[in-house]
Image 1 (cartoon, rainbow, N blue to C red):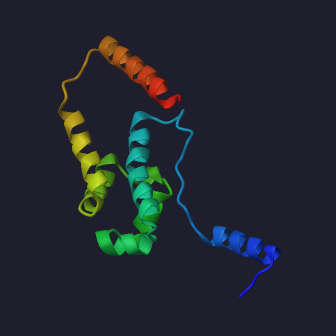
Image 2 (image 1 turned 45 degrees about the vertical axis):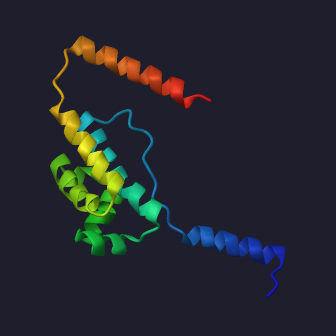
Amino acid sequence: MKYSNKEIIKRVEDAKRHKKQLTHLTDKSNLSTEDKMKLGLCKRFVKYVNSKGLKLKDLANSTGIPIQRLSEITNYKINKYTVDELLRKLSLLAELDAPTREYLNFLEEVADLPTLKVAETKRLSKDIREAAIHYSTP
């Protein structure tokens, strides 16, 4: 079956329109620390769905989380959830996904770290930012 260039372009554009990729939020400048944490937890769901090419219905069947809740989470409706609720739901996903399990283990380890004085925290944050800039530039 032969298609003209015009038909091929139309088919490609139609395919792009019908393929749904979940997105990430990028502007976090006005968010509280709690909201940023919630976004990070939601982002794990988005990454999993996108990496596996799943529909929310499939994820709902696998995790037991209702599809409506998954839709809210993957659309970053963070005002509907507490950090605890998102962590509980993420633990269900962690049963299916090793990177999510590692992420939750990391969060657990971080929570067990001793607290730092404000000056030490600021210094550490500055060092992390500088390291991120250093490693992100080619």
